[in-house]
Length: 335
Image (cartoon, rainbow, N blue to C red):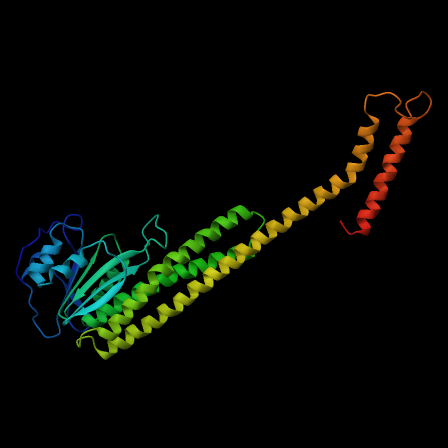
């Protein structure tokens, strides 16, 4: 490999996040940036895997000069276009995949993208923000039980991406179960949590659906070096992803049903309150009319002469009317 050499300044100031030379048996050795520039396979089984920070200046030019990647492809690998997709370009495979963002303070729907390019002998993965999935595969290589070639490395990365998505789905299902079993009286707080769950479901579904298409493209259109075992493995990953998409639909529907239930309870409670207020107003309306009529300040008001006991007569009359109204309300089953 020849071409422009970027400065090796560590993770914070260089494009290389880590590099491994796969030995074909599940293990691998570390390789530095300077060694990458002149690397050649010592055996037929060796494969070079480098994980790069795609926002580092000069990465696109290095991909073109050192790996001979066409300019449009190199531009795609370093761009902000993060919609999952995959396509074959001759004997190379190019893909953009997405994983759940588990960085502190992130929401599940804030997914992170990872670009991938490989010709079967060289594998380049690129990211902008920290993504744990490539490091998990790298740890397997360091432990000696990792992928043996480019195809198995792709399947390993995709498996970890999908597995980590399942954690978010399980967390949302558990949150819905807790809400269903918990106190639903605080409707405002519960509806806020349900809205968050539904937003997460929609975000994951929006990104996982095109990822399903991208994995299908890898399984169906990958070059010949992507072996049948790798195709079967990624087909199993696709099937798991399809099940997770179904789980997302179920979670979204469960959240919607719970939301409708809470709103129905709140509407019923409001209706009961309004009915009670209407009944109370209906009972006291005749009493208010009588007391208001007898309280006007005009002459000839009956029962106002001394010794007529008008006040007590009115009190008894009001209580009688009240009792009759209560009996009528009970007969009509108003309460």
